[in-house]
Every structure is written in C-alpha cells, then in structure tokens.
Length: 192
Ligand SMILES: C[S@@+](CC[C@H](N)C(=O)[O-])C[C@H]1O[C@@H](n2cnc3c(N)ncnc32)[C@H](O)[C@@H]1O
Image (cartoon, rainbow, N blue to C red; front, side, top):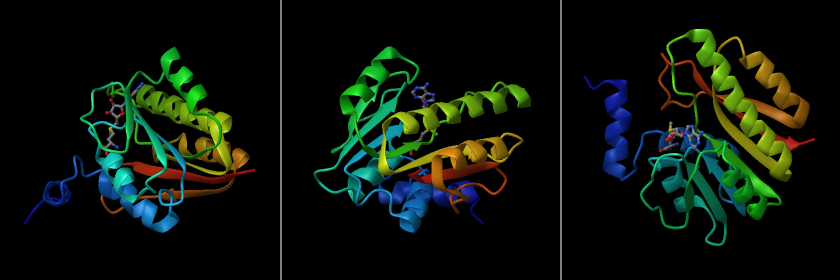
C-alpha cells in the first residue's frame, strides 16, 4: 500500500506539478474561489512553484501575480517571480510598486525548524503576523489572506488577530495535508 506522502507526490508528478502542496491550495480554492476573480495576487514563499503553477492555470489572463521566495524558482508562465528575502527593503519596495488593492495574499511559509518547540512556534507566529500586517497595508476592500499556520498554543491568538481585522475567519485542513502534521491554513475574508 502506498504511503500518504507517495500518493500525493505521485499525483503531483503525474499531473506535472512541482509539489504536492498544489493540492492543498486547490482544495481551499475550490471552496472559497480565491483565484479566478482576483486581479492582483501575491504569493509569499513560492518555491519550488506548485502553488504558482495552479495560480497561473486558474487565474484570469489579465490578472497579475507576484511570487516571492528567498530560493530560486524555475519560471512559471504568467507569474512574476522575484527571488528576495521577505524581510528585505527590496520586498517592501516591490509591494509599494504593486500596491494598491491586492485581492489575495497567500503564504505557504513556515520558519526553519530549530527543534525547540517554543522557539519554532514563536518564529512561525512572527511569520504569520508578518503576512497579516501586509494584508492590513495592502489588501483591497474585499481582499483575502490565506496563510499556513499550526495548531498550537498560538493559534487562538492568531485567530483573534484575524478576527479583529477580517469579517470572517476560516480554518482549513486540506486532505493533502498530513493528518499527523499540526499544519492548518487560516483564511481571512473581507477586511472590516
Ligand atoms: C513550503 S515552501 C512553499 C511551497 C510552495 N507553496 C509550492 O507549492 O511549491 C515554503 C517556502 O517559503 C520560503 N521562505 C521562507 N522564509 C522566507 C523568507 N524570509 N523570504 C522568502 N521566502 C521564504 C522557503 O524558501 C520555501 O521555499
């Protein structure tokens, strides 16, 4: 019997996607229709490009998508990739140029693990707050923020932060996300 990992990785390979993470975004997109009607999107932490491939496939031809990663990423047609650290001034400059009114910000980022639970949880919380702050600065009136996060002691705090800014906050655990992992996705809809 194939392992969970093999099944999704094999499906990605057969369907030409660079990562099985594609199916996590696809599941959420099928439920909330993030991509099809968006005119401007930003994808944070995009390499190797599984999400970018899906976005390029589903977006309207005139829609723009900036994708950012500190690592290199092979080209995905229709996606404007920049190899940058999100903590850099160059990234902020890029956002200013892309501004205003971004319809969707998506982040599949997480911290590099140290193995020390409390340190890793705080580092992930900081990354999540970074994405939320970008949303506060740059999202359009009906904008959406999708982030990867983890079901740990910080999740309630994070949901409170989302609820203070968004009219609706949803938590998703896509089938392609391992049940043994505490990974979940948080979606904020319609800034207040
Ligand atoms: C799980 S991977 C993303 C996979 C992607 N969604 C896909 O479908 O192929 C997370 C990415 O976040 C990137 N990342 C983490 N911290 C970053 C930072 N400070 N600046 C830019 N990229 C970062 C990592 O390099 C990594 O490629």
